[in-house]
Image (cartoon, rainbow, N blue to C red; front, side, top):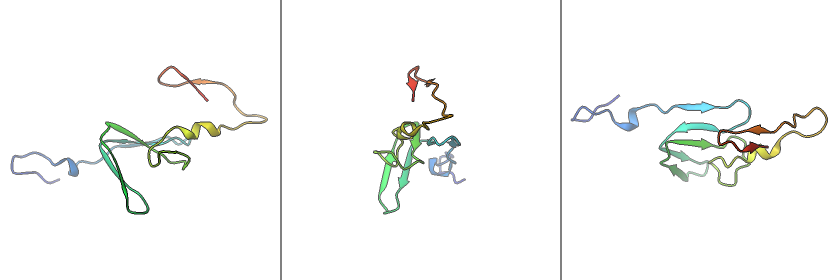
Length: 92
């Protein structure tokens, strides 16, 4: 890690923490972040934690808009139990 003349570690030198939900949810990245898309354009966010879409259904890609929740399994044997999310609202 490189230090500036005042002895401070540069923010760019610090690693980013990334958390993934193996159940098809987004990647959670400690922010701020700059995301480079396939076409070379960038999307930036200065939030403390950013949810990056991994399902490809988001209307605000590369950020997650919880569209992955709308594609819950249906039919015989599907779990139809409503779950309560961290905000106390029911999740589909």
